[in-house]
Image (tube, rainbow, N blue to C red; front, side, top):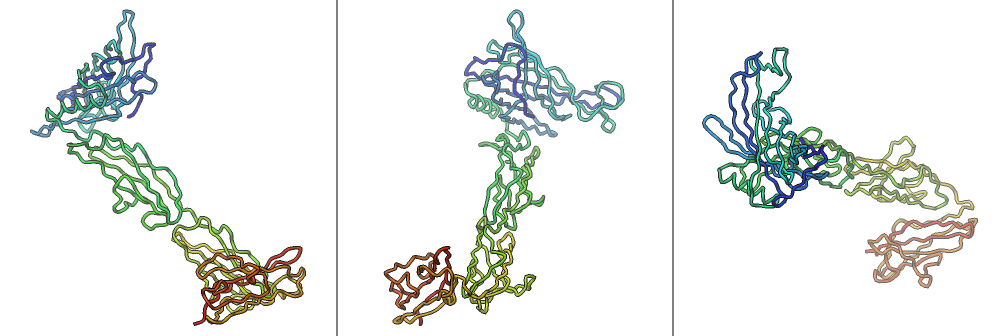
Amino acid sequence: MKSTLLKTLAATSLVATTHGAINVTGVSFKERGVNAPAGTIISNPGTVGTTRGYLILDSTVSTATPNKATYIEYGAIRDGGDVTKYYTIDTDFTEFRADLISGETGGLRLYGHMLAPVLVAATPNPQIPFSGTALGTNFPNRLSFDQTAFQTGGSDALAGPRVLTAGSSTLRSVVSGSGAPVAVRADTLAGVQAELIARLKLQNYVRIAGEAPEITTDLPLTDTIQDGVSKTYTVALDPDVFPGSGDTFAAPTFQWYKNNVAIAGATTASLVITGAQATTGAGSYKVVVTNAVGSDTSNTLVVTPVVTAFLADIPATLTLNGANSFTFVPTLNPTPVTPPTFQWFKATAAAGPFNPVASPPTSNVRRLTVIPGETNTGAGFYRLDVTTSAGTISSTVCNVTTAVAGTTFCFTTNLPRTNSVAFSGTLVLSPVVNAAANPAVASRQWSKAAPGSTTFVDIPAGSGGTSATFTVNGNDAAANGPGTYRMIATSAAPVQTITTVECVITTAP
């Protein structure tokens, strides 16, 4: 239960000017457990015991945004003849609230309520009222906690106030207490805390887990993850649930779940989720944090995949004039992190059946060049399937048709896909532009990509780069040696461009 530490209803506010601007109030609560027959109010009050604590406040108590207080509770747990002297630490205690009232004679009175330790009738957020005086520094001085009855559940119709029937008996706790200043040597919040804990340890008190885990930094509610991308999600807890040096109680445990099924080995504060991975990937995630007192469950994080799609698809129709070729170059967005696989398919009808494009050309790459009259490409219906670990997507189906050259600006003779030349020989590449084209050819530009490269570099005019044909030398060391060649022809106005097949030339064995 987290609430404002102190509120002020009177004109006077709490201002600390004491030693080190730190105040320690020692509180003591006496609990009497009640096991009363049905219909009675209080019968056989058995003393449960005394619980004590140190309430440590700093000078921000009077500000609009006060720091959280530290509350160290200590007492004894009896189990038969065994007694365990324990203490707990709550460094974000906000369950001490008070109003300061100034009397006509200058006296300062405090009225408020504080969280009370209740063992028998452990009600949620049991607040006990108090009244008392304040020091001249406006910190609490002497406090008196009013005797208060606590019980779980509701009351029945029997006589008496708030009588609860649980079987044949009524279970209650009656709590009262007091508070007074505690002298310390330290003058910082951390120093005071360490000093008081050292006192308790000298008296053989041991620290135990005092509260269930509380997730203070939670999971987002939604996120998207691309195929192959990993993201780390982490929850943070109230530090009071972790043991310190010399403490013997167990730290909280973590268990992550996907779609409400525990993930094997996911038992830390963080989880790495990788897109499209079988163990993690898309789904609903949460983590449950548990200690000896209780547990806390994170938000449910819903992870959805980032679906790879075609940024630039292939056209729905395509006409190849004369001997013109065309290269499909679809692009993906986002680019899959895990390398995808590609497969081109061809059919004789739009409805299929579609079969993988036979080699040549290579049909398991992103690019595909189709050539009129070629056995394995040419006219037909084409589709590209791209498969990632998230699934398979298919391109548009493209209907490729052919047409005679006529007066179209096109090639009537194209380059082959591959060729070879003897080391000491030469090979002439001679694509032919339609002589009847209107507009006619105005210029040509040859370019070359070195073996193993996909980057084309224009060949200078002085080396034959603007001629109708180009001669390739079989010597690998020659500038016009083996590699991948293409020629781009440009027409007169209105300007059009056509590109040959990219021809891979190798040295003959």
